Length: 453
Image (cartoon, rainbow, N blue to C red; front, side, top):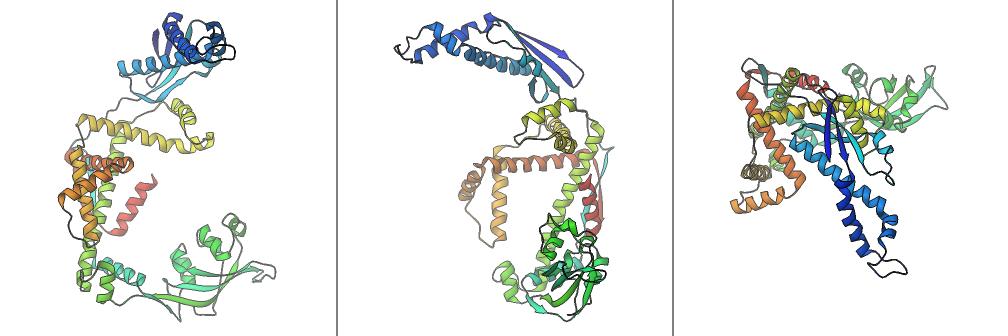
């Protein structure tokens, strides 16, 4: 058996495997004999069917099976021995498969296309400056959060004049020439002012009273899902009302009145006597918000470093090979249009994976079993504390952690989490971190900008 590698370019190669009769004859004969021992045909005792008949019945199939086994073994043995860093899986050339004459051919030649992973050159140093943001939690933010929670536990009351947080009960009626169309669409509904897109559009529904009429084009002020609910039509049909004017007549204004900040309220939120005043609740919320914002800031910092590394690496992929492979490897059928639409995002993920794997290898980053068990135990203890429950015995805690890690999907998620934490720590060691405090609104804008890239 002979393997010949042909480099097409730096990212594409072909492997040709030549198989002669002497390579497969012994295995094929052994498989035929084994089949004969099991074969049972009318007129013959089990195991006594003539070999000539066996060859006619299954000889071609067994030949193909044995050669395919040899091909697979030799192909991956060669890739491992030569330390080829491939992307996807080897793909047989279609023209080769069509040309095989299994009935008469003695010697065979198979060619596989390979996508070669690019060499990764991307290192971090103190010359690299990366901003790490921290969000200042203000007293105003705390008060707004307390009010939001109080509203969740409050009660609905009728209001005389509408405000931006209110729910308006009323009727949408289609207009033609500025008047209600006799054969037009009419639907009673509930409109949450907060679901309207812009503050300029929301203002049309604020400071209104029962009986007031608002003329608008619904598809111009909110997302299709909300407009469909307002008009009482299927979301697929709502586009037919683009540019159509309606009037909305207010029949009732509902407002959520916040719950009183008393001990009963605090007990509902945090458990009996865990929090006893607005000041204590504010401190709890401040700690929770700071922890949440810090986690988000860590993720944004990580994304900044990822973008820096991607820019440095300037990786190219064997795109045409990858597209062909994705069309065959995808579990669900994939159209060419879908592939073209989704490929760039997929390619970016592959590039980052190559960079990440190199960083892990170069810096010998590992997550040991003991680490992941302790990490899982810490998560369990945090969950117990948030539920107001007492500590668990260490042995019971360890047993619980091990049971959680028996779930492969959950274990993989936790391992990835630990690797991510270690990667962030490494990034902070390597680059020059510039700490910067910003407002929550500015942080949201940055995160949204980064997400849209």
